[in-house]
Image 1 (cartoon, rainbow, N blue to C red):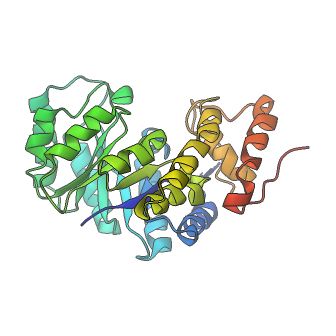
Image 2 (cartoon, helix red, strand yellow):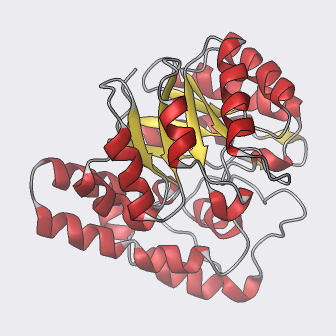
Image 3 (cartoon, rainbow, N blue to C red):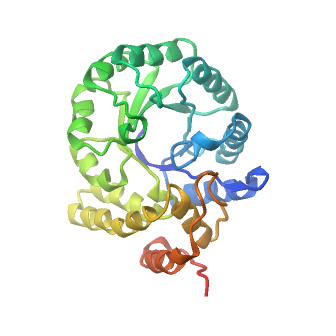
Length: 301
């Protein structure tokens, strides 16, 4: 498996009863119709940390069914306990995911040797391809050079998503990658173009839930050596990224999708819905992307 392109870090559509199936199917088709190269579900913006196992399995089943092989589906099965990750990974495999993303453990500070053993044990007891997920700002653990050198030897591990935001660390992964079938993916939307210029295979981008065509445009312009256009598009997402930070992840992102006609619901508690005080600013920002995205926005009067 060679993973590349723009992969959407998809939000999880929710209702009062759990997973909103209709909204999930609508979002999946919107993203595929717009041209994304894959779907990354149950990540940080997918609220994996707040969902029950039943909700996770329900989401995976719906997404895999609706995608129907049109693009790869990558699902987050990570957690703190090695055995729990193994169990969930095997359940996801049975539901037909193309690969799993496994975040480093969090809450506890494990050593490099323990982290290596964690992933090696998961690979030994599962069959589905594995993508490493590095997000040290959230987990307080970073996949170091020592860890990466060992884990890239595991053939079942086929890639890494790095959301650390450190281009030098990202370059280290690129430099150490000696496998044609291993993908190095950037998970920081502000660095899509800089990462591609350094040799990244693609990006796992949360902004592409809404700015799908813009993010795809960065990738396509890069491939076609239209560097100035790629830079303009990269810079254009900064304003949307700014409003995403006005409330806790992923509340503004989910609210923005709702304004474009996909009712993905509120985030899971303890994260609160967007305050009505932000309505005007969010609408004003979304209107900047109306033309390139071809989207209709239903702002409150």
